[in-house]
Length: 161
Image (tube, rainbow, N blue to C red; front, side):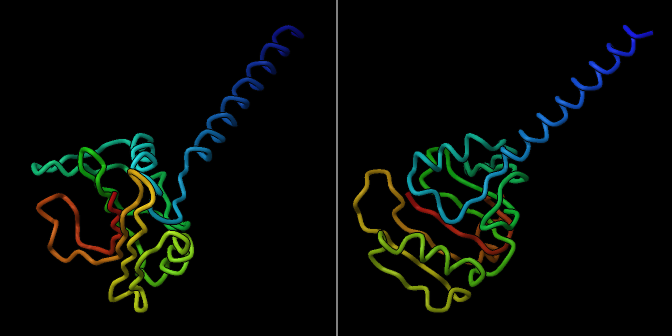
């Protein structure tokens, strides 16, 4: 009896340890963006961590965003081209909910900022200091513009590299 009990306890301990390991891995895999990735390389690294779930005839790629957050909110979609020259991040809330943190994140690099009324539009162009760095970002609303590309209407943060 004792041997079986030890074996059962050992198996239960191993199973509990695996469950904890997988739970930790799931938490560790969550990605929380505060703004656009700072470089094209960072954008590529982000995309490599996501599962591609579609491609439009035009070449626009879409990704599973179940593990992706933007300032804590679940991202509703992420789209890009093959060379990651741009990212379209579909957001659940209006730009005014995110603009202050985004502006603060890019304050030192911003060459031009037009973001006084973020819900009407918010554009930040960066200084040209870094090769392959973020060139500009733009909060905007898609209303039928990119449906044929596989991007549903909604509020987006667009990152250009």
